[in-house]
Length: 295
Image (tube, rainbow, N blue to C red):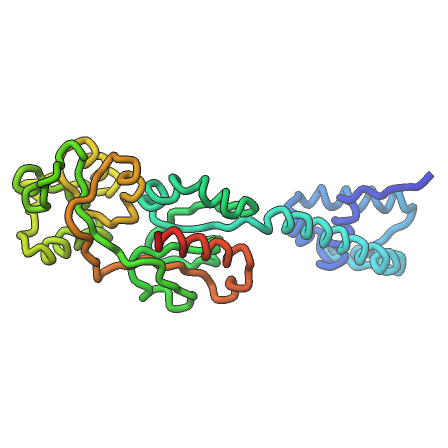
């Protein structure tokens, strides 16, 4: 009958052989010192011979140990490689896509079924980090940048779309004769006061040659999602980027009023590390994003 050495004993044996220390081996395996010591003791008892010479706190392989290590270490490495290969294969289609939270809520979520139909093999996970960060350290494969690429010089960046500003309101506030000017004369302006949206009303009003609404006498919110909710509740009119409210407009919750105005302060970009462009899944995601933003 074959005798099988427990894998945990073999892992401990190889770790001690390569580090020369049970303490270091324990740290490497994320187990206690006593667990490694017991695993080595159990293996030596099963083999009926010692594998190490112990000198103080250090341990070194003896002749039997060196012979055993030459046979066991390559086999164990194959097990490790096979395990890693299976894990990587399982996650080979997983991508982490970063975008601002408002875009994730109002643009990405309504399109989950579409990306699943376009590329059912992709497993796209969303993160909503903001500010400056490195994709590698945060585990991000692709980012949709809403802004400028000044802080992303080390990455491949491709513009997906311009940031088109549009006035929106509840359809109950609009008729065939409604103009942006008439809406502002009747209803409060809804303002998103966060840094990324702080220029929206100024840019839009400059195009229409109108005075910028005073936040003190209108409705101001810290987040764009709150401002959209206020607009759908007929509390006023809102100026925001078209991508953000596309789904609300398509479903008749909001209507666009007037012409779109290009925002020179921001654009939408696809971004990833240059070497990621070798990844077929990332190229597939880029193709879909190109189509969605152009649409």
